[in-house]
Amino acid sequence: MTWSVIVIYVTQFARQTGELTERARDGDTLALGQLYELFLDRIFRFIRFRVSTAEDAEDITQEVFLKMWRGLKSYRAGGVPFEAWLFKIARNSVIDHYRKQKPAISFQNAPPIADTKKSPQDTALESISKQEVLNKLKKLKPAYQEIIILKFIEERETKEISTIMDKPAAHIRVLQSRALNALKKVINN
Image (cartoon, rainbow, N blue to C red; front, side, top):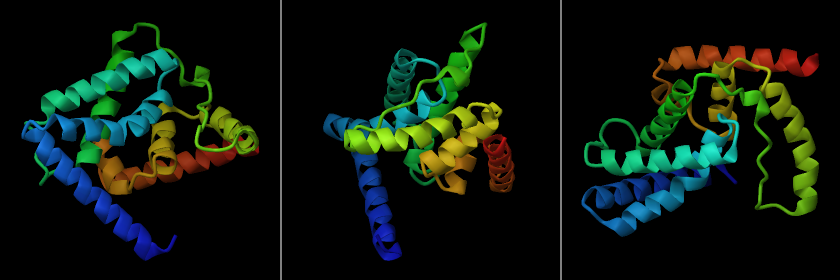
């Protein structure tokens, strides 16, 4: 895929998301459903990496979309991009989930997530290396885990991560560098 094709795709996706958001804000339930379908897998995956069970991830994902639906009227497209706003809701919902629990459940107990779009052979081969990286990732502190997941698994831009994590972009770049260095040390040990 060339750079221009990627730019066109991102632009079309942003336009589509903006149009769906406006229609959903105006009460169009079909547009609301399309937003749900568009972001469900990505939000679930983001949450699943942060909680210990698939059931918790499903519950939190449901909460995220409920909060999205309730907050859609107050969302303003001129401020934060919709996708960043939705990921911020997801991040805060995960934080709330852990605040509600007295004994914290470790991210280290999270099982791997299967990629269903690939053949079983490809999935098996990739899961070995992915599992190794995930096991190493689990040894990092939560802030480093989060930045690596957002940047490299969810492929978020620094500006979006800055919005999601409520930290300046410069701080995100420093965190990312530190997280990668920490991951490198863990992998090499």
